[in-house]
Picture 1 (spheres, rainbow, N blue to C red):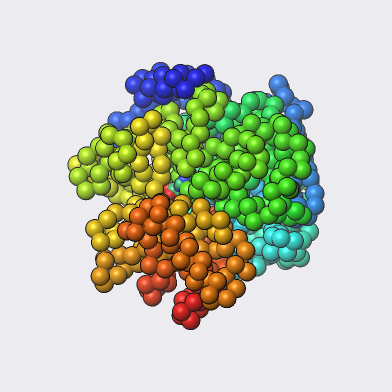
Picture 2: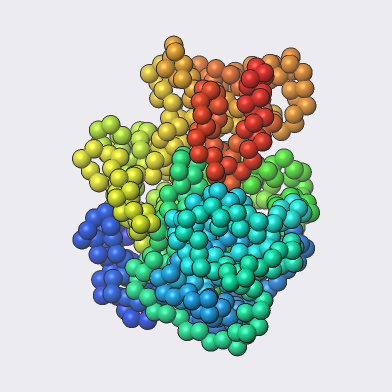
Length: 635
Ligand code: ATP
Ligand code: MG
């Protein structure tokens, strides 16, 4: 298909959505056919495929058993414990039924919540699929979270059961989970009746009698279990999942069943260009939306093998991912810019050590992909690098290039064009006016109804859903992404940053992203964050925090000052003096969320000497402490 054909495909998706989505719905199995494609009678709420019944687990597993039962479904690879396990569709079918029987024996029923707090092990995927099989609602909490964050999420989900494991492992170091879980269960006000423990033999623990169940023992008791899929209404809740918490308190996203299955089947085919029998490798974690959509459900629904990788991108060396690509003939790979920036500090030769011929595209999402990083990885791999822009809320890409359909050429710095089904607009935040012209900066919004697969509501809080997402623009109910963007003459979008990250320097509105992009292009810089800081004279000034590729380049104060001057000169030349940060602080590390996103609000608070607010989603508190100390010392 050519780029022009994609335009026709897109146009039909928005001009005749019922016919368009009814066709896409044929990509999955329905138990009872739907009666109405889209019920948008109660905006902004929407019911996709109303009247239909289906099941996510059936579509991901059961339906493939007859046609490709011996094909690989789940490939688990761990560089942490140096092991690989492979499950065919038939074997996965069996494991999921056993897990479902175990859940049933623990009293789990349709509509119950099950909280999954697990490392990246196969049992975590079995648990998600088993919940889907029974119509139980899973809530996966990223394994890196500690007791407090976990307790909050337990109280919000009120699960009947928590599934966990003895330990995770990170960089070869065992991270025990059970003590954190026990502490969370003490802290929370709605503890589950039971806890199901998977013992991987990494860290000894004790089972609390009457509460904790041992998976290995129950597995043995249910080894021949046959548990049929429960046919669920299309709008049945499949799961809840929290956003990353980059801008504040995380939001509990609630997702349906039928719309999500259709959206994933369509996106794997049209966007990711993945075909049945091939291998999909997403380097994310099941604790994030990418893990839900593109480690577990999407690839399996599409009849592909999926790689679940436990470990760092740099251990045993920085070639570990590319080795997996070669060994498993990966055709679709999905990662995040933050991971590529880690690799960028390594020898590019490591990326060329393996035969990567099978790989068609590398997709990157989650954060702005700066041009220097995109160019670096494109050259190192010799593959198209496809940026994609979406949110936990949407479940699948909003802006990217549909690689299964069109040959639209990637443009560095742009995630691409609106995906089918999304009525993307740029609007003026103050007036709500739609900005139709090219090169106008505005708030990125989606005109309702949201396409299949997107969030149904905020878990247990319809009011917050409407207030948070649908009330940003005067006089119109549109979904706000809270991101700021610009569209060029050819219809490509460029994300400029979050709407909160737009700063106002002496009356000029600047996206911090633009300044970051420019500084990231300096050869000495590995990573950079720019924030706006209150200034008595100018309202706000930009402040940059940069991590160097080689810290020795700023070993003395003179070297550091010279480098800072050099970086500022680059901003002057490329963006103009108005965009010049007041300072470029050279720091050892930047504060990030557990999902690897820059915590700009924490940087801003520190720079302004304010309280940092909720930091429960922060990866490494040490980075922020070091930074505070450095600022206090005037460094
Ligand atoms: P919270 O909503 O809790 O503050 P979050 O927005 O970081 O956290 P996610 O849903 O994980 O939670 O991230 C979605 C956001 O990530 C987008 O709204 C956007 O700001 C950013 N993002 C994702 N992909 C891209 C991309 N390709 N380019 C630029 N920004 C991106
Ligand atoms: Mg968000």
